[in-house]
Image (cartoon, rainbow, N blue to C red):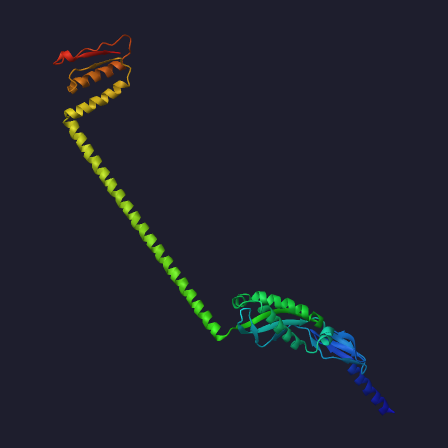
Length: 310
């Protein structure tokens, strides 16, 4: 009888081993009971009914990367080029992932190719090369919506390489080279222009400084000559100098309060005129208690003396 007990113990151990399922971190296991979905086992230790329950292959819930080979794409301006894409996706629902589509990775690849053709087919070559972010975002939204019934979430889509035809690449290189040469010529011209402007401004400033220096020198020389002439005239006064001084004295007399002025008959006699002017000025400075009397100065010809009463 002991062997029967031993057999039962072995059977019990086998059944226990078959009923225990240990699910690792970031994985999930789908359990089917009699061929029908029963439940999803998450991380930890679980017990199932042997023979009746059957577990599927563990599903990894970590984010995955799918690198798809280049696909021929035709742009709006009829340029055929090769574009390969990289898709970052993650399984969010093990049940939908198991029963949603037969081959999820292949389905994502084909969906990516068709979506890329539709988007790039609406763009020209230059727009395709400069609008990668726009294409990536559009593809991510479309793929995420399409793969949602499969229990898959598309986190990111990237255009890995865009390979235009050889003739297009050569034309683009020539265009880029011409653009660089044009920019270089513009920069050289602007530099030459600025250099000429600075040189002209420097010459202008130099001419201004030279002119100002010559003007200052001329003025200083003229003032020196005038001062020298003035000193010479003051040392040896001429008739013209005395006449000028007389007229200056007449200017002060005109501003005074005197009502009488004696003018000599011979106006060329500057000494008489100066004396008359001096006497008139002195008279205007004294208090006017009574009319001032101005004495006539004897002159050679008395016939031309006039007395002016105001």
